Each structure stands twice: as structure tokens, then as C-alpha cells.
Image (tube, rainbow over all chains, first blue to last red; front, side, top):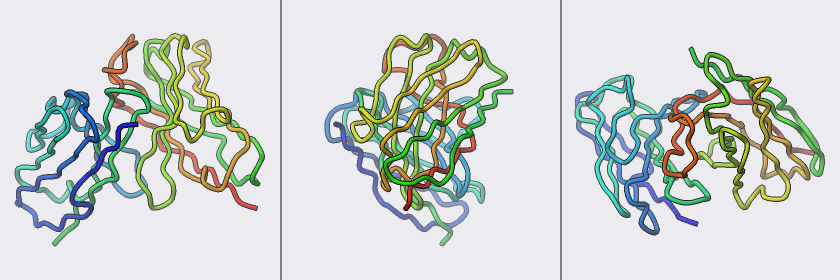
Length: 107
Length: 125
């Protein structure tokens, strides 16, 4: 199974900050990497797919980079609506696996 | 608009069975891969099972293989998860979700753009 490791597990930031979340795979997943945002009590929301493709309707302040085993999700200017938990997911091989999550909280 | 509504959750004893349903509307259900993802209280997301758009193939997480069965009724626009031999560690909110692409056969399109609100399964004596 491919293990997905996110860092940091918690990130404290202020509105307007640029934030970056890292996701590392235990083996190459090529570019088959997605990012989701989840707010408390809500279902996940797809943000990015194929490592760097922005899902329709997602603000352009979100961006993704990487391939192989190392990926990043960046938010260029953090907005109040962005305080949430973020998960990466690989879809290179079964079983599909998620990272442990990164909680972005208000500093 | 696309709507996915899970039902069937509840409190059950260890070793018993439960069937979850996910009713879909606002989409051509039989065009999409469907999946179940669960989230234990206070924990992260865990993929459970997936079924191709035509029901031709299913895949499972090792943690549920042999105990859970995913199925779909395309005539009823409904996805199911039959769960047997439930354990305390199966306690979670169970979400159904659809693939972002239609007629997705390969794993390289297994990303999920619409999710239900989830149904809570609690396994406890």
C-alpha cells in the first residue's frame, strides 16, 4: 500500500498569509494526486486533481505542484473561508489512500 | 444539481450487519464510478470501497475485504454498502462520493467531486 504523509499536521496562520502544505508518498504516484478541503461536520470538497489541476469553481489562490513522491498545496493569500483541514489522496494504485490531514487554524 | 444522500446508519452491536444506501439525483448515475469513504470520530479519511460505473469491478480496502460488499442499482440510482461482522473500529461517518469523470474505468480518474453528507455507524455493545 502507498502511504501518504502530510506535514505539518497543524498550521497556524493569519488572513493574508501564504501557506504551503506538503504531501509525501511512500512510492511514486506519478501525478495522480488530489487535494480536498474539509470543514467540521461537512463532507470533503475536491480542490485539485492530477497534482496541479484546479477543480472548477475553486478560487485561483489555490495551487498544487509536484510529481512522483512529493507534492505541495499552496494558498497564496489565506482567506477566512480557508480555515479547514486539507487532505491529499493518491489514485495511482489500489488501495486509494489519503494523507493524515493538515489543519489550518487561525493564528 | 447533483445530490447524494446516505442512509442506513445507526448503533449496532459487534458482529452484526448493516446496509448503507446512497440515493443519487441530478446526474446520470450509471455514468459514474461510486465510492465509499469513512471517517472515524476525530480522525482522517479512509477509503473503503469502489465500484465501476457499470458494476463490472469492485475494489476494497484490506480492512473491510471479505466483510463489506459494495453494489449499485443503476435502475434505482442507488449505491449500497453491505457490512457484515461489524467491529468497533468500523465506527465512523460513511460518505458516498462520485467520480469527477464519466465512464471512468482506470484508476487514474478516481477523484471524487461530489459527496453526500454522511451517515454515522456506531458499533458498540
